[in-house]
Length: 255
Image 1 (cartoon, helix red, strand yellow):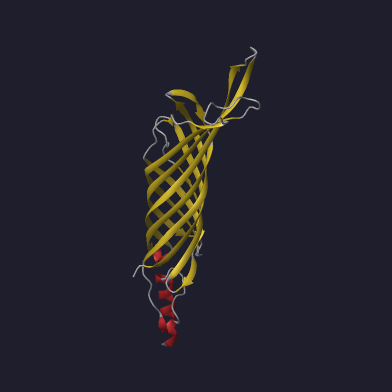
Image 2 (cartoon, rainbow, N blue to C red):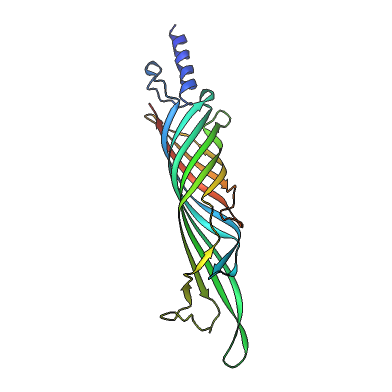
């Protein structure tokens, strides 16, 4: 009878606790919840893939192509386990900061005081800070009866603040500086702009990670995360983002 009771208790632990050994002993078994609450932190880099124009005083001054970016993300989330602790569904709500940088070079001919013509090379830089609200839905699946997992899902972004800055720099040696006060080889293009950005976007993603038992009703999930923007970030032109991030979740029983 005692052996039968022990087998039933161990089976219940496998069924309801996602494989974590959170009971103090088989005689002190505590059934875990199907629901977990937690926080999610992500930090990463991105490759910005663009083909869009920039303007000064409504005059086209060139195009930006590839750029780079940094990502910071914080969210709160809820998780529901299913399939006897082998899979779960996750929904989260959070905020993120996307810092992007594009640069391009071009050369323009100028006439020197002695009547000769020469080329001056300029660099144009575009910096963008996007602050977003995020909603995410995700399906997570354990791999091969282990604590490793993969997940698929989609981020939905709403950009509520967009700070932009355009900078022009003279690269050619011995060139005259800009007629700023004081004269400088760098200037902020106060009338610089690009086409309107899209407020909404969607980023399908794929993640790989591991659930780590911390005990006391907590578990930790470090993971790597790859995503790609479904829509162009800029209206009427191309600006997509391929992102790679490192993430960390801390989860606890919801009840």
